[in-house]
Structures are given as structure tokens and as C-alpha cells.
Image (tube, rainbow, N blue to C red):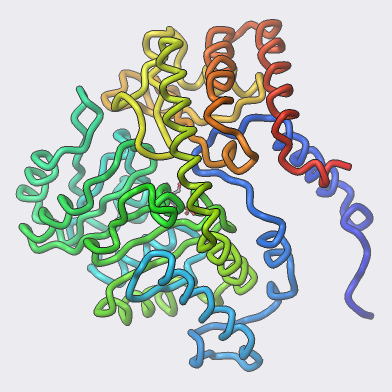
Length: 419
Ligand SMILES: Cc1ncc(COP(=O)(O)O)c(C=O)c1O
């Protein structure tokens, strides 16, 4: 016996066929989910490499398995590049995902039962920032702050009020559906006022921070977490950056606290993505993501679609659908039929339940990767408005779908994978 060299299509025609269909779906639809992107072939190559085979529990120079010499090199490279990208003192590249990264920070800095403070889920926070159905809400006491529902903005007065009332051990800033610049320095002030650790979760904004178009929390937060697969355009995964005084506890929390063997193929492909993000053209990419988002927000507003917080400073925005008479779930469905991928999302003070919602969340990282520019955004906005208005009308949705395919053909994603 030796390692099988049979092609996927021979070994598993079912998965092979699904992969083909998904490649076509991606090629011929507008990916507007702000947490998704399209990685480079180099990132894919490493992710699909023999590095997947190895166990490397522990850290470089201190492994619990033999044969790790090259994996030490990989992990050191990934850590060094992560520190360089963000100007951070220390980095841990092992978290399997963004949720794991956040969990490790809880485990490393505070104790179960302690109070944490995060942005309300229905105002744009993430599950791991204190949702009652997540480990964060199950194991910790949660005090949540909200946005001003008139303006859609996070304001110091509210953050300070909740902090003074709840006296949290840790304050979490960062969001999953918040379009404007987060005032990291304000959060540091509030954390200092109540003696709390400050965790900034930049899962959404990381690539923009590296590209210099969104302010960095690194000078202000004790710990910064991020996913590596959103605006940062790497493989799925998590990353923790921290001040040196927290490094030992964070490392201990990741391993052995939370995870077993690190996914070394994933860490190697993070390293590749970090190298790509350190190149000068990544700055152009990040700037284009924001320019495209701003152009899309304006174009949607011109078509009388309301944007929460009046616009965006980042890659993401929330469309408030209340005036259209179409709810978030129906809009997501209609847009999907037209080949525009979004997710339904609550808007601040949403009258609808989370399974229905009154909004959809859209973003520009993936479209920007395939070469969309500000000039394309009015057509993208027209397709969005057209699909929302055509909800339930298959004939009209088919007409929007045709336009979407035309746009996709103009900006091909991976034609080499379709042939
Ligand atoms: C702000 C924020 N934190 C954490 C996560 C969790 O990341 P993952 O899905 O990799 O666990 C997300 C993912 O959507 C996020 O938006």
C-alpha cells in the first residue's frame, strides 16, 4: 500500500460534483456577505498540503511530539508576520477560529462567573460577546451595551453608564454588524475608569486595519482577537494579539486550556496570507474595499434604501428594509434567487424577531477581490433594489439574475477552475 494518488472525482464523485457546483455558484453570483472573501491560490495550495498530517501540540521549541522542526519554522514565521502586520507585542496563531480565539481570552484573563460587557447581539455584537446561548453567556455574567437607536452609533455615555453599573472584569469592543469607526481609545478610557481588561475583537476589520484604512485598537486594548478569513483574506481561522504581560496566560488558555494539536496546514496558510497582507498592494485592496462600500451605500441610498448609521467607514453596512415592506428573511431569499448572497440581520430596535429581521447585512471584501470598483457599485445597488422589489416574483427575479451574471462575467473570479 502507498498513498492513494487517485483524483477526487474518482475517489468521491459526490463531493467532487458538489465542489464543481459551488465553484460555479461563486463564479456567477455576487458575494456580499461581509465576512467572506476569496483566498489566493497560494493560500489554497498550503491549506491542501501534507502539513495537515502533523501533530504539534505545544509551541515552537516546546512540542509534545517529535518531527516538528519545520512546523516550528512555520509557526514562528506566522507569529512574526502577525506581529509585524499589527505592530503587536505578541501573537498566538493557533486558535482554530474566531470564536476559539475569544474563548481563549475569557479563559486566560477572567474566571467563570465574572462580569463581561459586550455589544448587544441585536445591535451588531457577536455571539461570543455575551449571547445567552453561547459559552460567553452561559459561563459568565453579561452586561450589554447598545447603540443609540436613533443614530445607530456606539456612544461613550452609554458604554460608561453600563460599565459603571455592572463593574465588568472585561469589556469587549468590536462587532459583527457595525459600519462606523469604533472609538478604541474611548473604550480604553471606560475600561480604565472601572478597572477592566479591554478585549478588541477586530474579526471584521482586521484587513482594513492592516491596510491602514481603519483605526487600530492595538495601542489601546490588552488583547486583540481576529478571524483571519474576512477582510484579512486568509484561510478560516483565529489569531490573538496581546501585550507581553498577558502572553503566558493567553498561550496557556489556547493550549492546553482549549485546544489540542494546532492545525499546522492552516497556520502555514495563515502565514502565506499574512505575507500577502504585508505587501504594498494589500493597502490598495483595503482602500478599495472601503471606497466600494461607501459607493455602494450612496448608490443604495439614492435608490431609497436606508442604511443604518447613515453610511459606512468600513467594508460593511446594514440595509434597513422597513420602508420597502419586505422583511430581512424574504429579502435574503429573493436576493439569493437573483444570485446575490447576503444575510438577513437585525437592525437596532428591530420590530421583527431574529429569524425574520428587518435588515440585510452587505459588504464589499469579496467583490473587491474579484476586481469590482466604485464604478460597478451603482449597478450592484440596482440589482439589490431590483431583487428586493421583485421578492416573490420569479419572472422579475430571473431578469435581475441575468444582470447579475453579466456583472460576474465582466469581473471573472476563477475562470481557470471552471474549464
Ligand atoms: C466579531 C466576530 N467575532 C468572532 C467571530 C467568530 O469567528 P468564527 O466564525 O471563525 O468562529 C465572528 C464571525 O462571524 C465575528 O464576526
